[in-house]
Image: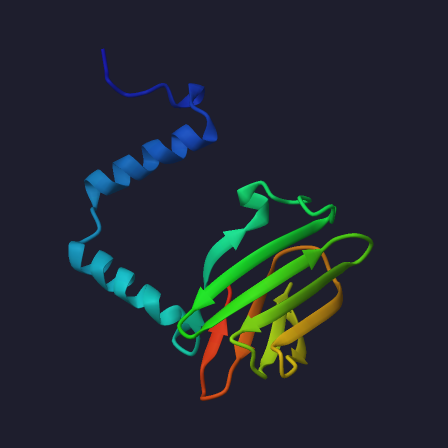
Length: 154
């Protein structure tokens, strides 16, 4: 009797996992290649600091606590700046935000291969109206040649 699995009985995911095991056994990835790939991953945002998600009301279970249905609050942090964002989904989607500490900046909202641009005011506030549904990301061009971008979020 053979130890070979019945490939006809495997799901697609199980079949792919079996194929990955076979390829890893026959031709493993050299350790140096894995290290180079991991080091190169950091270069993907070479021109911008990646802001870390530090708060999301959808995850914290606080959506709607203040009676604002269809509202979500998200906070990102990067060296020297915090980006506070409120996503309002009643009717058309609207994005309102503020930079802390307050400062003027160019704010670029990226979505679906396109972008919208605005500037924050002296208090660091900015907004975008009629934002299409789907994932979005913010890119903030701050003074002093610092650029910060958020990860993609809904």
